[in-house]
Amino acid sequence: MLTKHKKAKIIEKHRVHKTDTGSAEVQIAILTEEIQKLTSHLKKHSKDNHSRRGLLGMVSKRKRLLGWLEAENETRYKKLTKELESKK
Image (cartoon, rainbow, N blue to C red; front, top):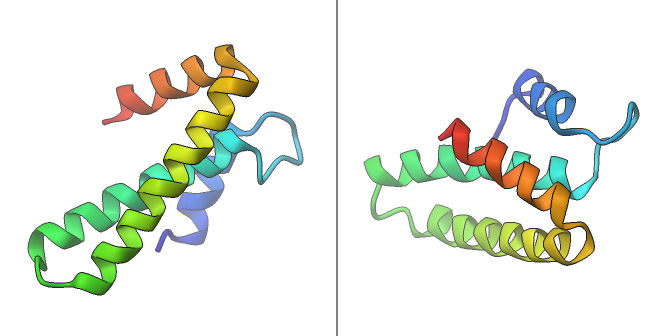
């Protein structure tokens, strides 16, 4: 789970307009951060199958959102994927 401040920073960085909190870009960025945290947790706790199932759900949701964003607006998709890859 992300902290309130971390999530606010992600929303601030990826929002499309001033009051945006739920655009595809914001959702994908938040999911990416949560996936990274959960992946590091699973490296330490490899038998935590409940968390693994949650991780797979998050990856699936992010994949669907990325597919939708690519079909809807390819320039926003390319910009977002470039930003998220450089963060890794």
